[in-house]
Image 1 (cartoon, rainbow over the protein chains, first blue to last red):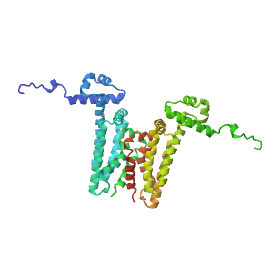
Image 2: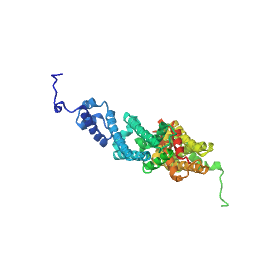
Image 3: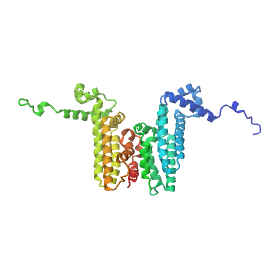
Image 4: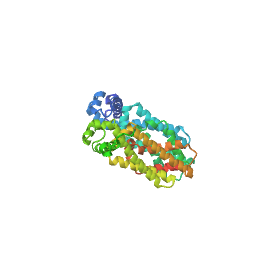
Length: 205
Length: 205
């Protein structure tokens, strides 16, 4: 298209992903101040200074914005967990750090920001895509550690890998899932050490 | 007291514990129909046909009645769990049955009677005496099984008994606590077998 006119970026306006990021950033701030459940897309539009129709061009619903915020939060937890796991050399220590980091990162996010916690709770209740994907990635990380431990000879190899991974995931779940985590605050101090100790004993060759 | 007059039972009216039982039975039915949170002591009095003042002679508050109902429910779960444990001979099988019975009995009670579940949820949120006592008795049962398994040579003896019992209790807790149980429905099918398998592997000598 020889004769197509190309506008300089500034004249074309911001790219779509920039607008989306801008909406998500503004929504995160707004939700964390006024709560997710109580806020409507109209409230949000007014607060950001966009029209409601303009927001709907980028997100089909409030939940779609919430999903994006939730996905960002869970990605943050996940990278903290991964960083903690990578710091350790051997699989048993990796597993121990994984337990500890999950509890710490989840608590950090959820107790620091009660209102965002509300989004994560909705996400967990309604089985949003973001939480399902997060749960799968955590299960994958767990399987990788188990696999490495089986290869290094640190862990037993008699049990089926996927069943063992699932059982350990069930042990972690009360500290991963925000709805359950809120009922486990009394135990978050000792739970990581006690549970990873138990799990490691169950994995001894 | 030679001259004390003793009335025949019928003239003295029902004994206190009989009235208490009567109130608890009526309240259980009323709550299970109309819900615990929404019912006031006045509603209850009207429904039972007692005066509010008469009810207050036996229970200082609605919560006191709720506590009694809750204690009865938890006692029922506990006896089902104990019966299941006693059916088995060896400690590993006892532990397996304990997991299974806890999940089944809790699910049974809580899914059959949603409204009573509400009482148990209040009890768990507000740390009522009935739930604390129940949790302690379950922990004791667990310790007894561990102790027996250590003596029979089925379980390891290297770890401190109380710490090991606590770690296993933490694994069970999501299925014991009604507030958490409601978020674990997706897992109640496989969880008992998977978790007791994991725990038994962790206990191998």
